[in-house]
Every structure is written in C-alpha cells, then in structure tokens.
Image 1 (cartoon, one colour):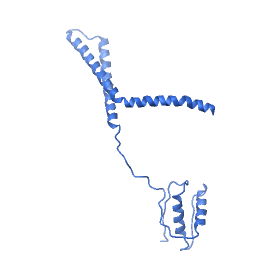
Image 2: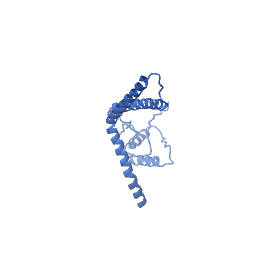
Image 3: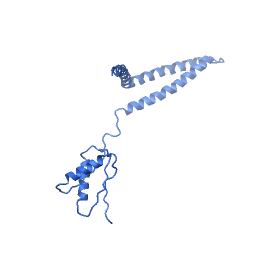
Image 4: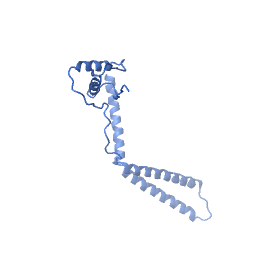
Length: 178
C-alpha cells in the first residue's frame, strides 16, 4: 500500500503540471496566434528584402544557401498559415455548444397502470427473486383466464422501476389467444 502511495505521489504532480500547461496554452492561444502572425510577417518581410536584393544585382545568380533558405521560409509560411487557420477555428468554437439541452434517456421500465389487489405481494416477491438469479433467463406464467396473470406481470414490471437489477430494459408484450 505504501508503494501505491508513493506511486500516486509521483504521478499526481506530473498530471497537474501537464494539465496546467495545457490550460495555460488554451487560455493564451489568441495571444500566441497574434505573436506567430507577427513573427511570420517579419520573416516574410526579410525574405522579400533578400529576394529584392538578389533581383537588384542584374546578371548575378542567387547562391545555393540563399535558395535553400528561401525554400525553408516558404515551407514554414505554409505551415504557419495552417496553424493560424486551425487556431482561429479553435477560438471560434470555444464556448459554442451545438446542443445545449436534450431529452432525457427513456426510462428502462415503462410504468403500467395496476389494478388494485390484495395478497399478491408474496407472489410478486417470489417472481422477482427468481428473476434476480443469474441462471434464470425466462419466467413463464400460465393459468386459466381471470386468475391474475396480467395483474401479476404489471406489478412485477412496475417493481423493476424501483429496483437496480441486471436488466437494461423491460419489454412488455401482450399476446392474445388469437
């Protein structure tokens, strides 16, 4: 247990540091994008000055070093433009929620209208105890008409609303003799 405590003591500060850095990055995103835009503008101005300088020297060739440097500046300019676009999109999206409210999930059990009964509690409890067993997959009720099968099933159905059983959903289906 002491080993776990020292493990957590080492992990938690690192997680906090990473989280703080990430939050600071998000908070300072707009300022960082402005600084990046300013620096790429300065770099492009320098590139243009170098190109104008070379162009002004009629009959002379640009050195390989200058060509390579200009290619790198052009490539970095494209990368920076992508970063600026993505950053602007991120800034535009923060605080905008496409969905602000939604319907609650449907109830896993639909409450059914019960008939008033006396003395069915023990039968309902027995049926619920059977259904709570993991090896019981199906519970069948049978009998002649009018003995209370449907009433019993309605009570069992409604009990599921109050219990935290292993059932994700309860489906009520009426099958008539026809």
